[in-house]
Length: 245
Figure 1 (cartoon, helix red, strand yellow):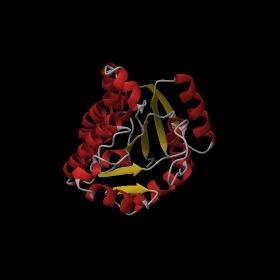
Figure 2 (figure 1 turned 180 degrees about the vertical axis):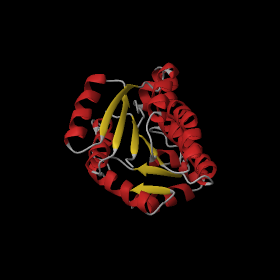
Figure 3 (figure 1 turned 135 degrees about the horizontal axis):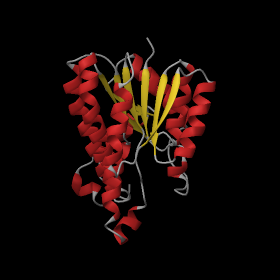
Figure 4 (figure 1 turned 45 degrees about the vertical axis):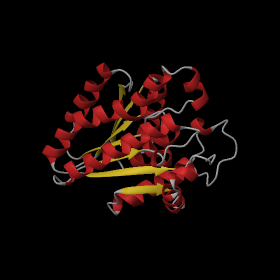
């Protein structure tokens, strides 16, 4: 029986690479995002690559009225339901400082919107007793840093939510993977200048599939970010406050 993958934030660079990969495995894909023209092109590409089917659903993380259509599309499919979350926004911290109202959108995009969809989807996966959830967070969520602490706070909250969801759904045969990428060569990182340990969307997707096959709980990609963030988290707060990282 064909697997189904729901892709939240389907127009992002990493999402597109992930869609290509599961389409080539013959999965059915439900592409959810704001740009329906982009989704139509991605759906056509997925079908050409071997997807069993490709549906398109409007999804705006800031608009709860768009969430139920995703759940209905998933419930209509037989077999295993999976979901991959690639939603998020990262405006410059300076822009948020100048306009604090931007904070609401960042939190909705990276935490409350996707978490609410997953909360609505969870009973379906639990009832079927299988499936996987891939939640893409960020290493920025491991510790609040002066350059992006609003974005980091949103991703930290999402990681904590995924941890709890993993404990809840793991008892019913559903696996939840938390992905923490460092900088990835995407539109989100353009204009940030040289970034350490930059990776690509295709490399992140390859790491995700490997982590899913091993049922890992948390994935740092590139792997080097695990020791780097372990060290950063161990820096005493009085010292950390004086650093510009």
